Structures are given as C-alpha cells and as structure tokens.
Length: 505
Image (tube, rainbow, N blue to C red):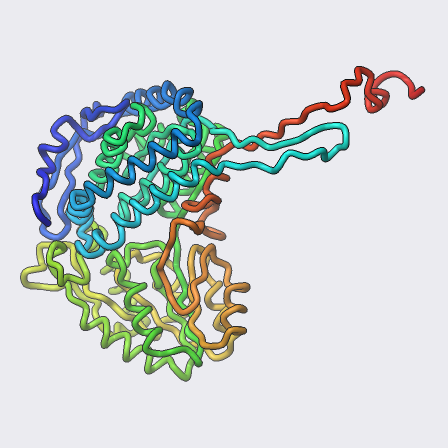
C-alpha cells in the first residue's frame, strides 16, 4: 500500500469536523476504533455531545446562504476539484477503509474508493442540471414554471458497512443541490467520513458546507435528527433504528429519507446457466463479508437445478480465501466487529436445529482466531418462515430453498417484509421480464447481482424504506419544488374575482 499515513497523527486534533476544522468531542466519553482483523486499537477519540451537534448545525446554517447562492456551475466546479483530490488520495482512503472495516484491500481499491470518486464526478455534472418543468401558459393567462431550491441544513446518519460510500451517498446530492450538511458516521468507522470532509476543504469547498459529528446514536444521532434547524434527515441502517429515526423526524415535521434493511432473493429458474448462477450467488452473498443490505441472502432454485446448485455453491465457498485484509490474495476479511461476528454465528447455530449447514458455519482457528472472522456459510433445508430466511443476518450466510412453479418462486421471493434488491436468473426473456415486473424491490438484476452505478437510483420498497440515493432521482429528496406563476394579462379586475365578490357584467 505504499506509505500508509498514521491514523493517530492524522486525527490528533479529534474526530469531529466542524466548520472546517478537526476538534475533539465534548461528551466526556471516548470510543476506540478497532481493527477487526487483529483486535488492535486503531484510534481512541472523544465522542460528540449534543453541544457539538448544535455547533455543527450552526456552522452549516451559516454556510447555507453562500453555498445555496452559488451558481450551479460554481458548485459543479468545486465537486470536480473534489473528485480530483479524492483520486490523488485514493491509496490513503483505501487503507483507512480496510483498516477500520476489515475489508479486503482489493475491495476497497476496486470498489469502495473508485465508486466514491465516480459518484463525486457524477454529482459534479448533475449539479448543473437541477431542472424543473419548462415554462408554459397552462392557464392561458399565466406563465408557470418550476424552480428547484435547496432546502437548508441536512442532518444525515451513515452506517458502518460502507462508511465511505454511504457517507458520500448522503453528502453529494445534498451539497450538489446547494444544501449544507451535518453527517453522523457510525462510531465504529468514522475515519473515511472525516477524510472526505478534509478532502472537500482541500478542494476549496467553503467551511461549514460539510460537517462531521462522531457520536453515539442515542445522544448525537437523535439530537441531530430532532434539531429544529435541520430540515431534512437521511438515514441508512437497520429497519428497527429507522423506525426510531422516523418517530423523531416526523415529530418535528422534517423531510425524511430512509434506506433500511434488506433480505434480497436470488431467484434461479430451471433454464438458468448453472455455473453463472453459482458464481453469482457466491460473489453476491459474500461481498463485504455479507455485510451489505443488497447482498444475496435467499436463493430460491427451481427444483431441477436445486441439488446441483447447492453442491456447486458449497464447492466455490470452500475455495474462498480468508486472511489479512491487506494481503492481495485475500478474498474474505473479518466482520466489522467481534460482536457482529458472534451475532452471525448465533443465527447459524440456531439454524442447526431446523436446517442443514452444508458448509462453513464456524469461526476459524489458528492465525485468524484473534480477528472477527467467520467462514462462508451455506444453509439448506430451512422453512420459508424460519429465522434465517426472514431475518437480516448481515454476514457471509446464504440460505437455499427449492421451488416448483414460476408462480411459487416469485411469491417466495416477495415473502419477507423487505424489498430493497433482488435478482432473477434465466435465459428466457419473458420469464426475466416477468420477474422484473412482479418482484417488489427497488432494484432487480437479471443474470447478475450487486453492481451499482452512479446514474441509477438506489432505494427500497416496504420495510426497506423510501427515497433514493445516487442518480438525479436523489434530488427529489434534497430539493424543494416551487411553482412560480406570472400574470400575463395586466388586467386589474380579473374575471375569476367575481366568484369572490361582485357580479359578472
């Protein structure tokens, strides 16, 4: 990785980024970022208090008039410069992301960091295209047009599974539209969010446009969501926490965007390419050690292919290489923490009572024992209403179930509270098209699972939340639509006035 920066030196001034400067938190409580591959301390920092949140919101509020008043071209130029700064610092970002999360370095360098740079470049262009409906005379006597205006200070909360990407999914559309933002990253993984804010300053964005408060959810997070000067909140995380965020936000009549849990189905019809489906299932269930709300978690395989699919997926999972996240040959790193590892293991251990663990299902020994590692796990024979089929495990676990008819397969795919993502595998165009129509999810892939692109929206149905990240559709969350109407007649006494007072001539 070349010359890795020293994290403790980089954040010696603290892990709060307010009004363009790093500073310590004032809650009186500290938190330690742990390398999940080794259990070693990475950084101990002071958590944010409610007073820190207040100062960050005040900084964002002060910065809002100038930033929202900048031209779209000026905001676009700033974001293009930010994309260039991120590209220059890509190695440091990849290192920090793998260090705090345990991601294999090949995932950080080939997915997380370049995806973030691309997303920044996309919103640099999109900043120039905040368009409303074309002007026209819809009433006959007036000219109408639509303005899109920035809404104010956004308060957002990002999760620990993709700390860099999720932070930028919140920050970029907000600031491209002219808003300012206060972001609370997860306490476990604050490093790259803070680095992104610093990179924005390096690129010339004004102080106060991006602020980062790193604190506990019940203190800093809830105070941010309920803050009277925050006009909109965007949250990515579990459905349970999302419900609490919604309670706080709606009590103060805030605009709300929620991207919540998922339990993505992986639907394999009997005419699918078995080898392609098996490889796709392993990659899609194990990406980021399964800590992905769009990861393949429920594979429904039509009965003629079921046994062969189980055998091939098990064979491929057994070939996956666990190891040091910074080794270029490592395929699978640890989970984000030992607590998360133990949570995943508990799901699998309970499943042994009603299903078959085909492969995996264990914590590795030897050199990996100190880390939060868990072997890729395949479960078969579970019932549709069982815990491992219905609940979000958030680990390297795939459950396989058979189905007979196409109707049954689609019904099973829809049979959870979630609806974030899904995939269907078939060589038959009509079968594939039916799946895209009838599966209730915000994204349906055909003969693939996981790829995302900046130009297309990401968001869910049902208990997976509402609203969109990425793409120009995200501007629906971060802009206010205003109708402007001009009278074209210059007539003082208009005909419609007579419906309120006076008589028609």
